[in-house]
Image (cartoon, rainbow, N blue to C red):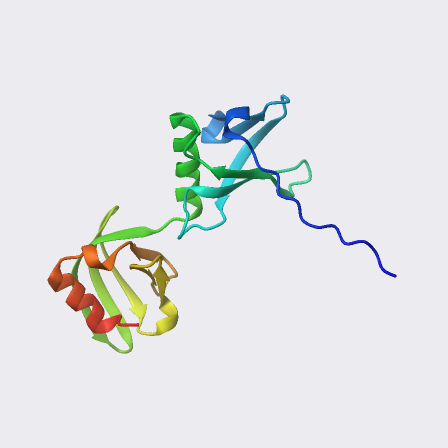
Length: 175
């Protein structure tokens, strides 16, 4: 009747049977139990918000510069500390964002919100359109804000802001 369609197959990488280590130029290398070596590996989280340390796919490029998946690590917790740190650092590069630690002020003008905040990377000022499509849920208690330059600002848990900051934030971002 028709051609057989191949079902996608997930190759799970056993943390006890792989070695993840730093290579030249700060790249990540992966060696499998059979001796296969992959250079320039990068990581992508299947569920970066709800399960940031689980279901991590490892990718690299072939000789024709095409991206392909090596396999998936179900949970990075069993990895040795150095390997876990390499994966977490790779994920941070993949999903770069500013984490908002405190809100100094929010002002509204011209259909924009002007934020003055403290982040994990220091003080920042940014503007975002005051529209629902620029504020996304982050887990159950947080928000991701996307500014006019498409930079991301994460509040992991709005309830951890002080009372004044919570009231200021929810005055404008109430959805």
